[in-house]
Image 1: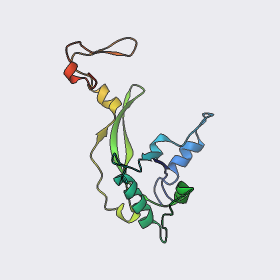
Image 2: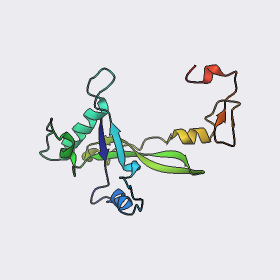
Image 3: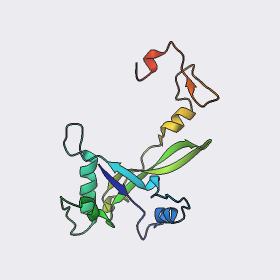
Image 4: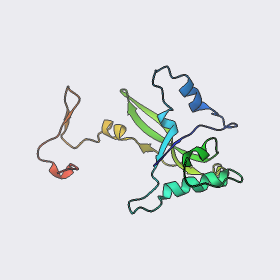
Amino acid sequence: MIVVSFDFAKGDSQAGYFADVFKNDIRPDKKWPNQATTYILTEDNEGNCSRSFKTFCTCVEHSNTRFEIQWGDNFGAQFKNKLIGGVFGPQMDYYNGRETQKRVLRWFVSTDKVSEATVPDMSETQAYKNHIGGFPQGSTTTSDGFTNIPVDIDEELPFN
């Protein structure tokens, strides 16, 4: 797996947005913002190169003139300060007692493909789905924050 931390490039209307969020974070153990971090598996279930990893590598190479990926030690360091395009889409979330709509990275593209990329449809986090009724029919929330699941709905539960 590789971990990609990103920000908006110079010239973008939001240039340096996540760097500012990081800089203004007053927590002692501050980290790069979660919204600006993505995890890419390098292999699929059969041990072959994953599609998302191949897409990432191809997009970085196409977006940076004369850049060619070098395999081996310190592999991740070569991507620092390289350009890549990102397609962002709307996502509904439920956090801290509020419904929120945010924009999240859905996939990478080459920088020359950004302007023609189609905005993906709305997605929902699991917290939002649970908030709007994602629990099984007949379940109730208790005062301790857990959900009581009725006894007779085994077929709706994921682990029987």
